[in-house]
Image (cartoon, rainbow, N blue to C red; front, side, top):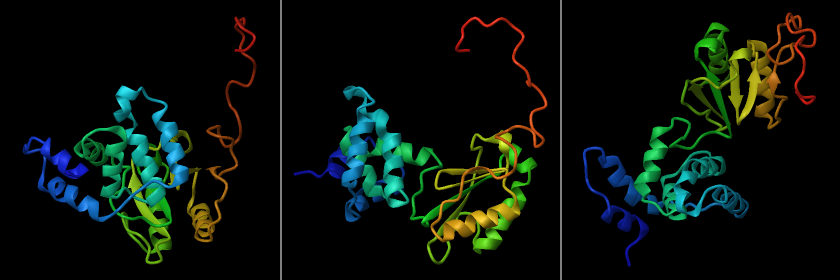
Length: 228
């Protein structure tokens, strides 16, 4: 009986786009078993319920995220599992995985530190924050500490430009960070304590440091609805 990988390969039309890495890895996938935990299978069912049965492939991205949350990266065997769940060729899952930079192909540390260096964060001192983290952890971008505690990544915009610079750790947003505050944050995570996320300054959200300077009064226009 053909395995899932063999069935998948039998349907593949070899083109220059399909590189040697995929043909090699698709056989290697079977050597590293992967399965979702029981709790995560409940999440799988919840994810699939959001899409029509004839469009289960739409669940590939959230299923990849779930696998990465479970393992710390996406093993290639997880792509086989996802392909079987959504009933598509492994190559489709592989295409999606390699397209997005947020998916990791190798094991990461217990805590993934993502430093935004895009325009707003760059203007607000992201380089100094990044250097402070590198010095504190003793690693470079893309590396993991020897104790497997931290992995450091440089990323693009995290969508919190108004409170730059931003560092995201395990999905927690730390905004308005400074060298002093990032040292404190890393110290807490090293002790497996999750510090309070959000702005690390005294301001409220993206408001100016001294408080509001505009929109201090109710709008003068007549309200159309009471809930507006």
